[in-house]
Image (cartoon, rainbow, N blue to C red):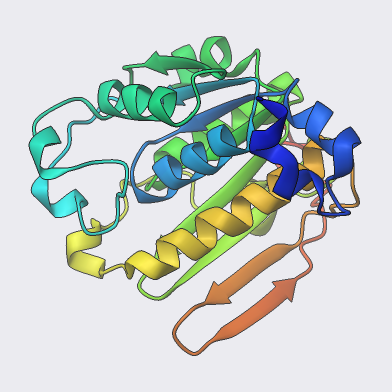
Length: 243
């Protein structure tokens, strides 16, 4: 009965039964349960990931509802991780869901992320992504960077020791960023970037070729570009100048 749930994705030649077995034995941590993070979590749970850990400390606001499909008007004021955990278990109660009601910072990052097979970025600021980047390199756990602004976004696989990390190409390591209500974000762009991030994550889990290129996608124009980002041997996070 449970196998019937995954027949359509197993029929995809890139997945097939061997890929499904990997999915069902993998653990993922999603940091940030906003638009991108909650969409990533939903896809992962629907595909049958063994365990998902969701990390966020924020509450649901009315301004979230246009792009954060996990939540409803009745959820306003509630903790994102509490609502998301309940909703994810309704989608697939065979998946183990752990919620962490904390802000990810340098002091707790490695403890939260250490048991993951892959880390997914659902954050919205430079500080959090820098913490993810450093922890990923220190733990030797791959992570998928994803960011959305306006009608476009970026996705990049970061495989410690194999690809460039976020700091290799000068991504800022400090700053809260600009809120979505100020800079603007199209809900369809959020969905597109989260879907792309999930696809790249599956390739990493199944050990398919992933070179860590930076993928740019604009859903309005529309436009897709792939930019090669070589490793910086003197990077202060993953290179010889490591702090």
